[in-house]
Length: 346
Image 1 (cartoon, rainbow, N blue to C red):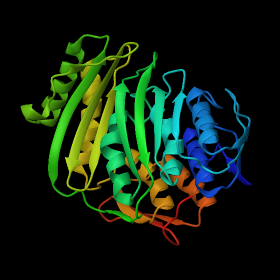
Image 2 (cartoon, rainbow, N blue to C red):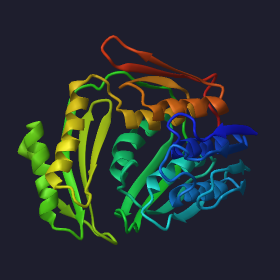
Image 3 (tube, rainbow, N blue to C red):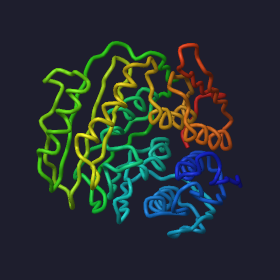
Image 4 (cartoon, one colour):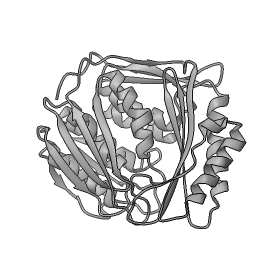
């Protein structure tokens, strides 16, 4: 049994989610202590507990410590079984973070699976649905893991109630991911959603992004109203290049003007476009696991965050892989994932 220190590095929930994925994929049990010790509210919250329960169900695992607030957990996996599953967080916790724990193990199964996840779909400190659909899944497909996601209903903090459906196919031939340049710019779009709020909020956000980035009118959406269980607002800016798509998200919050959220998001977009790295920090975190469980590869990114470095440490605890992170002369960083051989099916 592998012992994981949940306080290492950035000390967040990603340590647990990566450990669940790797445990299911390799059949290796693990024990984790000090879960989320680096957060204001340590221990398992609803979304983390849902991820544990989802992983346990698809992998017929024996689990101790699976309760709200727990800071210790033992997880002993069985065989991963494809099928139809539904998991509800019961709060606005991120459905996309729950998906992280089970997507790759199910993609390594011998038959297709379908998931329905209920909770938050556009949440602070978590990948949005749009990021996963537009930025992550296309690169996952390039590696050889295939999934399709559909947003049924948006879910915002604090009401939650969002619904996403995911279809996961057994993986095809696994190939190294090589992503060293962006290629030419092919698309750019600013969009904003509101639920149970005036649509003018969304329109002001996209207009502000267009003005600050000097984008043409055709790249700016007018703002949209969506169905949700409670009020919510999300600004999404998508930048597509030949080899990679990046997605930047701003979240409406009580007491913050839409123009301020738009300005913050526009600064992140501008910083990305001013650099040369094709992979942003959030996407870098997401790519490590599928590359390590696939055929490896390399990508160029920005300076690695503590989140990325912690994820690398967890991966190397479970797998016989070597992950290198090297600074480049232009200020970017090269991440290499070397696997002994392409991973087979679980």
